[in-house]
Image 1 (cartoon, one colour):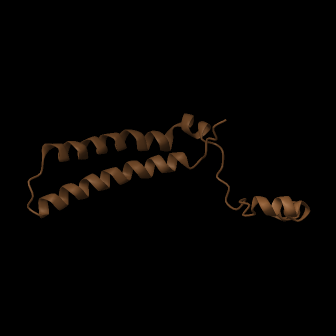
Image 2 (image 1 turned 90 degrees about the vertical axis):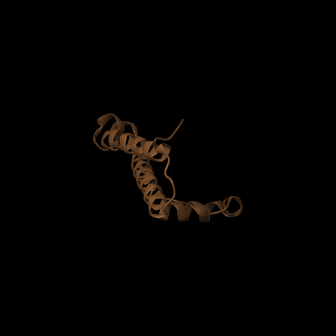
Image 3 (image 1 turned 90 degrees about the horizontal axis):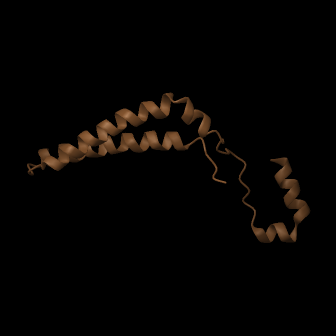
Length: 100
């Protein structure tokens, strides 16, 4: 089963915002360097703005997204014990896991 983590919407929002900023900076740097800018650079910027304008509000406000991505990301439930430790000392490993 695929786990639907709650960090996915935040990741998509950040990724879309990153692409807008990236394309904007590329266009600004090319124009300030005096390089000839292509129409593809402007199209890429407009495309990333349009996609971000649709996806970011959708991932923030959609109840479907909120109900789909509900598995919380564990903050401190990571076990850094190796497999060998679990085999050699199963009682100690179980005790450490229960204490956390």
